Length: 624
Image 1 (cartoon, rainbow, N blue to C red):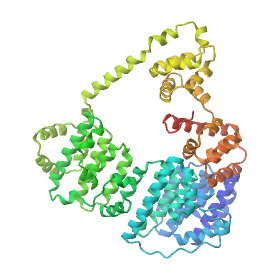
Image 2 (image 1 turned 45 degrees about the vertical axis):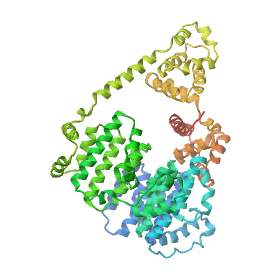
Image 3 (image 1 turned 180 degrees about the horizontal axis):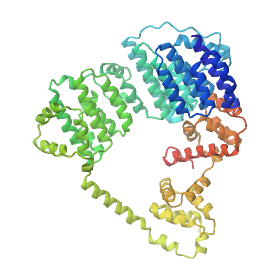
Image 4 (image 1 turned 90 degrees about the horizontal axis):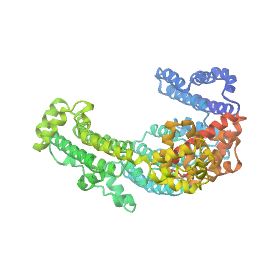
């Protein structure tokens, strides 16, 4: 315990010093670290001061830690390694403290918290006045299944409302909601979200606290809360978030939760039942596998020929409600969930399966769902499913195929063993025709061509809105050609400034295609026009919701650097769209940073503007 305290308090002191004076300031502290016996912290800080890459430092320290056999000593070294990496990255001291404390059990953490608070380092909702009044941890009572289901239902109800509010009003709207939240673990995670903490850091802190939880039901509850926090931060819709959460609950438990929460829209639209059809059918493995293969191939072929929404009417609703892996997974695909989230949900459901044969069947179904989601060829889907079967199982499954027409198709698909064979000639021809149509459409209308054949004096006097009218209905290649010509210097009335004005009033999809073309033909021109269209100071004119979305993507140190030299209106606009705690941390970072070169400030501003452009191109914000 003594070395744990010493490590964390020393790491905090080093963090404060290096943030004020730079990483080299830690050089004077290295001797004291050696004397204190904090080997990993000492060695790691020497490497950091010498400018060693953080990935190399992590690799070296991890190798040193792997040789340690004593679990307590290993934990101490892991915490020292994390301290080195956090200090080198310039983490805010509060985040560093939270991350290091997340490795400790509650009783150890609370003792050290008191000593940290006495040094005015804020942790969660506590401040230095609370240093002597931290309550002792409550005795841990094992959580039974009924209590777990009750707590899980309460969590889902709460985070469901938080998710909807955050999507309507922005993450900052949750700040006031946290005041009355009793669950400290959930409150900590959501406060980190509101403060704009990077999702990787939040995941690390919450995962560490979950991993040291000994009670299995509490561990699962914390995992549910972590999923909820990260989903809210990511902006997932509330239905996707709940699908992720309930993938950790077995069917009998979900039936109880469904009844408790039948007032929520999610459970009104989803009728979950306490059944597992694969266990009830009483059929042999090879028969069930044959049915799964036939159904998956049939769905795959329908998707190739038609839209994926055409599958809605043929999904077995009873199996979907029972969370049969294939039907439930296909319902998620139809809802346009991404493959990563579907894989996460189905994998959690499969992990709860105890029967090895049934688990293999479910794995085959999951791979079929993901293959259809990725729009892969049916032959590739089949080979992926069959990869789970050994030779004997494959022989038995082949005999169990009931549809004679499918048997012929099965053998044909089985014969396709190279990736090059998976190309579909009909689809290729269709793609070529579509491409030809697009190419024909790119020649531009006669009106536009005639207009630009007029004397340049007449063109130069044309109103920008009229030029935009000509451009907006054209194929992107035509628009790009026109605007590139205007910006070439031949258009004497305004050059790049005129092009910029036109683009500001051009539809986003057209604008995106124009820049795509320019980036191939004249990347310097593309970059110059982008710079003129939006600058860092233009953040002051963005709406609050969009700024909050941008701040979620911005590194706090880059933001502090970018704000060192900018208009007060920009600073106030950004501070207004951050939690009070996060704004205070940015101001603190700026103060500790000291003088910064203009070139470094401008580089930081360019990075943030680049993030804004990316979000605007993706349609997630509208920078104007």
